[in-house]
Image (cartoon, rainbow, N blue to C red; front, side, top):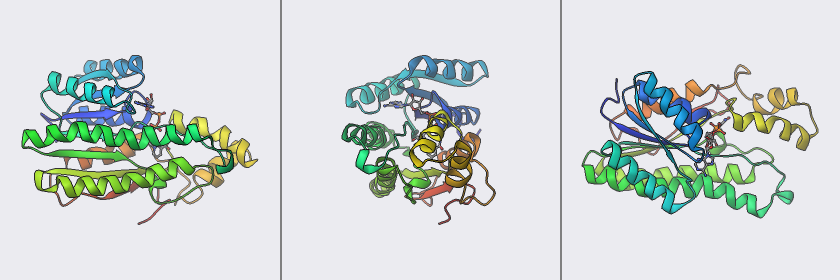
Length: 260
Ligand code: NAD
């Protein structure tokens, strides 16, 4: 129970990586806040954590809205007494070659991935400072924080940007015990990836099997997908690592797709 007595807020926690991360942090003893655009699914995740004996609440949060983020963080602090761990995870994917990439889609991608990370950090860090206990901020990056792929101009730009944000937060927060790190998964079979397989097949003119084998998993050491549990366990490790020895880093969890 490494996280006993801690409060952890996870954005995008109604599905996929965020959901499993919230479940793992709760299993490790944290009270978790399931923050998501989709309140109905967030509530289901929170209820099932509570049924399993954990502590969880759900709240509606659009990470691109400053008012919604501020209200959500304030509600979490009021109900659970503080915030020790922030996992900025909410994300979507939109793929297209750059000459066809709609400007509105570019702005939407950067808003969810980068504005969301900035707004949640800004709202949470002041509570971490005020408590005198510091905290751990974890950004959900990607192998695409380090590598590029075709069709993903906005995603790769945003995920690279998170490395810069984490490094600044690590420097600003260091003297007050706030650590900031980026977890960088390879492909994980969540709804975000399931949607991409047919889209990429169409855009690249290849079969869905070829997208999986020759695009998504080609550079891994074993042709395997990373799992939600692999990513959740990595987040939990960083959340429970209580010294500034590990800050400003990115941890790649990708079956060797990217080695740093
Ligand atoms: P997912 O689609 O399963 O879950 C994403 C969640 O984010 C959903 O519950 C959705 O409602 C929520 N969300 C979307 N927009 C939001 C907003 N504006 N405000 C609040 N919540 C919002 O996706 P996932 O695969 O679990 O992805 C989670 C994160 O992991 C993303 O940042 C993604 O880029 C990253 N990631 C995923 C993979 C992968 O292969 N699946 C790999 C590397 C990184």
